[in-house]
Image (cartoon, rainbow, N blue to C red; front, side, top):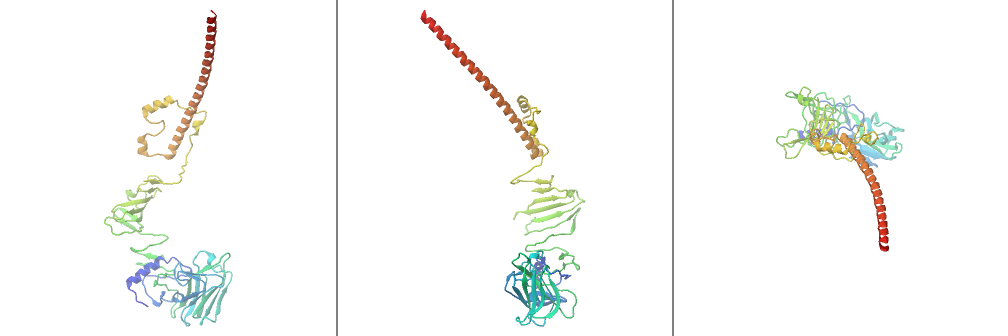
Length: 437
């Protein structure tokens, strides 16, 4: 085996730990301490203590399809896809190695559709004559596991049936575990000699002798690549009178004056008036080349959320523009009472007098009030609708008055026309009498 420097080993361990969330085997395999010790068995793993996974260093052949290196690689993206009558064969390279446990799972570890419903497990020393070890039908177990004591070089898994409605199954994490002579228990772990390696259901401690999680670190950590985790939890620290907890994911490039660029921060400081709401969560960022941090989102312990502000005074406070396709506001009541017969519509002369004296419409907040207190969208829409309905009533009244005036005008026009006719008739009579004389 090629010798690796301590730095290479440490970097590989960090990568291995991050991708170790995949587990298809249901084994309880503790690892404590965090030291790299054990015997190198092959290019894919290191055996520590009493157990060795022979499949991890074996050779896989199949008439199905391999993805991410196939079922022997210890990665959540590695599996062998098989359909009915297809098989996968593992060559462990020796006829003298005894297999004590056989186990495998499916790439979709919580989806029973992709585990085979029927299969056989056979072994051989010449890859020609095969002996059956197990024949299974009606399988629903996501992580089949068998104990045995057989020494053979070749091991074959053949699919005889798929789950109902499925066209393939996926085999992942295929293990052939051998007990090392003179040792007891299940104390083995897979090393990150290549990028597909993972710890299999182990607990790793860095700076702690009794780890309580997959990765338990007592101290600071630095990752140069991406980190994916279901949750990140830190311990508490003290800073003067501020007692706080912090979870931070940073991309710090050494810019002077920027302490916590691009990070998520959680504070709890019940003894400090600055954080009197007991908790403050912040998502912070900064511009490259700048020494100024921008708080993008703040979450306060009283339930207030701020976007662009560190001091949200309502359940949601936004400093900036909101772009939305639709906004709904719950209201109590509306202004339709204006259109009911009992409503007394103010006289326009009274409205004019009010405007002359106050320089704004009745019931509408002044400019000073809006600037100081902001605009209540729901209440303002109610007031605006009230004014629209009042304006509509004014227009209806004016329209009625116009119609009445038209009727009066038509009557007067008819009277004038009749008077003109009478006048013309009198003029003709006078002209006839004048002609006779």
